Length: 431
Image (tube, rainbow, N blue to C red; front, top):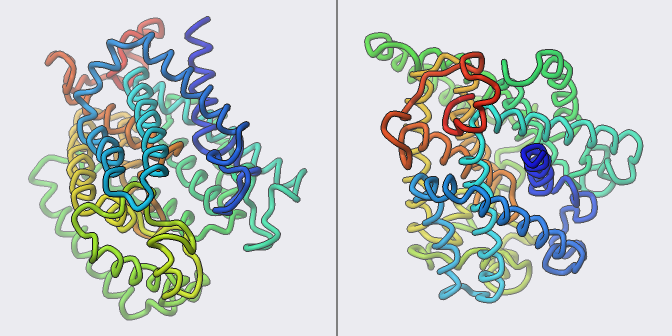
């Protein structure tokens, strides 16, 4: 019974972190009265959710403690955010948000260590199916909430309160459902994939649509990663030649391609934002302005960027620039070290397992990379995508043997080989 309640809470927490429980109330406005910092009700919900999370962490403290060794880089980044209070342009705000970031990180470590990859993907599958169904229902039955009538008239925003948030969620939903072969019932996957695809298209988020398409195309490359070294060389040459060809095509026909996507060569003024952000970074190159210490509308350091742009930006529309802006090159290097280590562990996992499930960590890491190039940021408190990144880092590290006995490193298993009753006792296996 407790296990069932714990799984239900995990889904509820994932929904909460996605803004699925409060998104249509909070919306996309920086000054919205439904922000957690300004609303006692949302603050109480946040406190309750994390209090329950801490309770489950205590219940499974041994797994959590073992997972800390696999979480060195993400913990270092979260602690750097806390320490950045010392040089933040808004110390009190940075301190509050960095504390929430730390407990969000703790949930990611708990989720990644408590459940095997199969369990994680199953819980994620049901979470994103709920998000898709509820968002479609909200758009169709409660269009005053589920459809944007102001900034992007006609675009669906569902229960998340913003079209890009909905598109981002559906992009992840599609790769979760694709990876869930043998984990979720086939009929559920077949029924849910078209629903998620329709919601993604109706959101009008072109970035999410492009990222989802790129991730699906990348699925053809995972067999190449499983190939033997003699085969990898010609495949690498082919991939490099294709990448160079696409880059040259984009350079020659960029404006035409962007016009089809409803964009121009400034990428909807993103390049202007990046230029203003780089000017700000250049004066705080090493340590940045502190976690959540830069973007404050027409106040503080972001006022100069707003004056230069002629409008108020909420973030840099590039996760890596935002990270550099807030935690400097130190923070960027810490993130890069953890990211590339996770990619290496993910590739090793993929090469020892033939299950499609084994592609999930690399799929999500690719999503983080692609989405952060044009959107972002990745390092955020109360954020589903940061928690999932932490969970993926922990999962692939533990599967590689970090924080686990050597005999458990890279087990080759399939869902059918592990008895159902043993699933909870084998958190670092695929199943």
